Length: 153
Image (cartoon, rainbow, N blue to C red; front, side, top):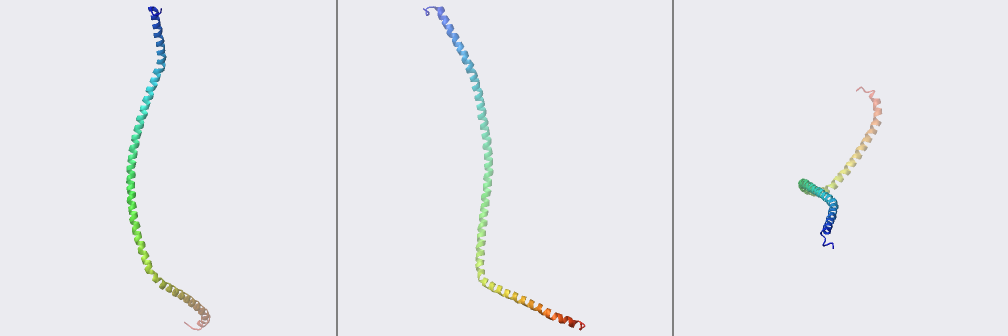
C-alpha cells in the first residue's frame, strides 16, 4: 500500500508541498498588492480626515470671529432701535401738541375767513379806484396839456 511505502509518502508530501507553494504564490500575487493598495488608501484616507479636521477647525475659528462681529453689530442695531423708539415717542408728543394747538386755532378760523372777505372787497375797491383814476387821467390830461401850453410854470 501507499501508506506503507515511505518513498510514496514522501512523494505525496512533496507534491502537496509543491501545490501549496504554487497556491501560496498565486495568493501572494493577489494579497500583497492588495495589502499595499489598502495601506496606500488607508494613508490617503487618514490624510483626508486630517485635512478635513484642519479645515473644520479654520471654519470654526472663522465662524466664531464672524459671530463676534455679528453680535456687536446686532447690539449696535438694538441701541439704534432704542434711539429710534425714543425719537418716535418725542415725535408723538410733538404731534399731540400740534393737534392741541390746531384745535385752539379753529375758533380763529372764522375771524380769518372774515378778514379774507374784507381783504377781497378792499382789493376790488382798490382796483375800481385805479380804473376810475385812469379814466380821470385820460379825461383831464388832454385838456390840461392844452392849458399847460398857455400857463408858464
